Length: 483
Image (cartoon, rainbow, N blue to C red; front, side, top):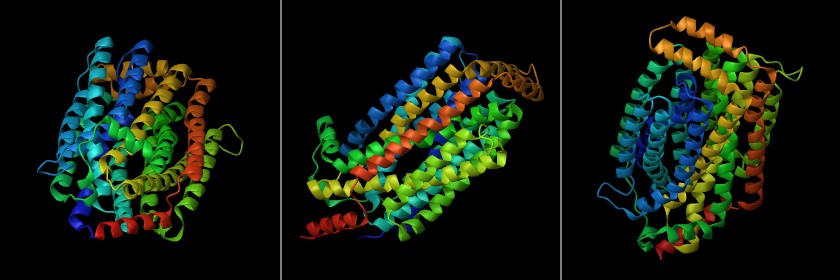
């Protein structure tokens, strides 16, 4: 197999930093920005939540459609790079607008609906092209593991930069701070993806010559015929549901368990655990896969992750599980480390279905098959956002947070100081009762337990491409191409 040049390897992987900074800002903080800075009624916030779910469902459907477009387009720049750059530029502009323009009431709801829809569609341009490029660069398991591992590290760097810094600087001056952060993140998105566009050399595969112009019917046929893609895709969806809620609930959890003034600092420490845990998983993944089979790693870390969620559920309620900051961060580290390993395992499993499909049908569809990862991420995001918003509304936490939003608006207008915001916000948070806090904790823990258990069951029962099977697939393709 032809080896990748270092320029392609590193510019591809480093480019993930900016795009995941952008994704983290919107996925982790856009709803919190609305919750804690906009004065919206429960009905208006429920409409926002519904818009998010509908747009993400459409975005999930749009992912494979974008895969078809990319598969059918062959520009002078290559198959993927034009979409990577165009998507980054358009998406960065929309992110800045979402965190800058502030109409009121239902006018904001309408503006948000249009903006969020455009955000999802432009991010899809970039996302499908970027991830579709990964399996096309190399079929060598070692090269592919290197790309997944190193790219994962830069993904973590991008997410950690935003997720760690933003909570520590927004409280008391949230409106202006979010606006500045959006501008910086948007520029980083464009610059890092420009590095990828300039540095990567795209590869051409012989099997691509057998592919004619593809339509919707062909796309569904490609999905339906690949039984291993179906099982890996379902597992990816369930894993993303299970792994996403802890971070999405994070700000509300720490605000309402420890206070508005202290919560931001604790979120930062918890995010450090996220960064360290995920980075540790990225660094150790090649070593783990060298000494242990993927199936063994899958079983061990799935079960371990579920145990950690059970412990998290009981913190502060069971006498032997005190609501201690150090203990919470230790559990967080263990959860994020386990999920880091599981995420890379599932990415490898999904990518390996491309060669499986190529061997069986003598066709190669990197872009289309790679959309399954993005599809599962978007669909799980819609489900998770629905769970989060429903939990906030039913528990009454959203109503309390609106009082804090009123304080942030006064701070943004210069009517009160940051210090006054923090003191008054803590007073509102203390009004939350035990029932409200337990509903929040249940949403964080129970849904992930069910989703991760179902993910483990599907992969054990239906996914068959282990290390030996994949090596045989690649060897058979090579022999066929040499004839």
